[in-house]
Amino acid sequence: MERAKLEEFNPWWINGKVDPDLALPYKREIYLEIASNLEKRFIIALVGLRRTGKTTILYQLIEKLLFDKIPSTRILFFSFDEVSLSLGDIIETYMEIHNKDFRQERIYVFLDEIQKCKNWENELKKYYDLYPKIKFILSGSESLFIKKKTKETLAGRIFEFLLKSFDFKEYLKFNNLKEDEFKYETRIKPFFLKFMQKGGFPETFSLDKDKEFKEYVKSLVIDKIIYKDIPKIFNIEDPEFLLTLLELISSNPGMYIDYQSLSKQFGKDRRVIKDYLFYLKESFLIRILWNYRKGKITTLRKKKRAYPTDTGIIYLYKSQYDEAFFGKIVETAVANTIDSDLFWKNGHEIDFVHENTPIEVKYQEKINSEDFKGIREFMKKFSIKYGIMITKKDETIMNFEEGKIKLIPAWKWMLKKNSSDFS
Image (cartoon, rainbow, N blue to C red; front, side, top):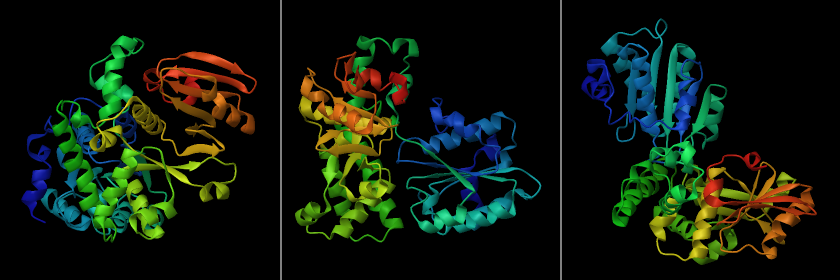
């Protein structure tokens, strides 16, 4: 590759610093966790949905290394987002420019959107095994493990960090709220309502106009994944159908996935629908939930449910809605906050099962006795003594024969991480 192109990606070789517009001052919670692993041998992989801040974190890590007095020429950055080159070409050009001996010096190699580099896993394995002093830090907008050979090639060499869009607590901190303000509903509720509507894409937080927000999410997130990222990795014939499925799920968050019904509705083979949903999931656009059962085989045979991974995607397709649908938006936010992959349905229904705790979302003006039936049935069937009901405003503990159920307003629940925080 051209030396000038690589130098353009690495301005700190010349001026010794990272552009502050690239290494933004706000640091996400996951940043510290990754930074603490920079001196360990394994490859760091930062994966997640587009526009959630992966590249920003890479630049922040580079800034940290420079602050820690690591010589700038021992830090290499390259992005494959718009440029198609082999990893070998990049490494060889870097060695020519700086005359580095990878066996003698600790070199930090940052590779952005690595999944777009052809045969990257095999090349990475070669350099990793040959040069123990190289530290690789990668980012990717598709799951790095979507292909079986990737798991086999890099087994035991790579550690994955998942970067989601901002959660509610990060959103509040980004807006300069202090934790001692979190307990005041009048202070937090306006932020909660906006966050529920437009989600956690950080670059949209300053976009007040709906048109600007929707154009951002559509052009920089959805279209790039649907028309560029997925087709580049998978041989798909109909990217428009990917978009159709995403819009369907976003307009009906929590919908049941019935392959036979979808096959009839769209005139597509069931296997095609299953594959396309898999592509959307592996690109972090949707999450799939399975029906909770004690036996895995039984679980896999049951219908699944699907949610978009950020409520901002819902807003792109359905910005006008009633209070009942807003409850589905809250439900989506809850699913993404806890990384839920389980619900329960067996006559009665529970929205989520998290850490063996049933969680039901009832974002409505009044909670009545009927609303407890599903969660009580779950507790009875599985001998669970504790459940959570996420409400619009009710906050109390209800004692039943099966155990206790904690009612907590959604805005307050969103500030917590684990079910155990509410016991």
